[in-house]
Length: 116
Image (cartoon, rainbow, N blue to C red; front, side, top):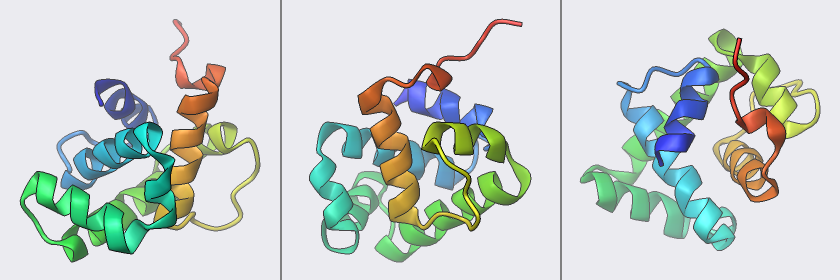
């Protein structure tokens, strides 16, 4: 999960926000079991909510806000590089989870920070 949090920081998300913790845990879950991507509302949000002792609605809203932060004020160019295509609109929660988890499964080079 630390590696995913580092990527989220590179995407422009503060690690202090609940949404970043939720999203990092969520991506980790999807890397381990991609079936979560097909059952976001019935399996995924409940699992993340239980893990963080919060509500499913809070998980959904926090992840959505974090993705909006990346898309509007963060490093959208890096997100598009990871997605391997231009994102004309903010990706949905499940789309963003799929983009990030698939990138880890494919071990895309853009996931590794480059030394400056």
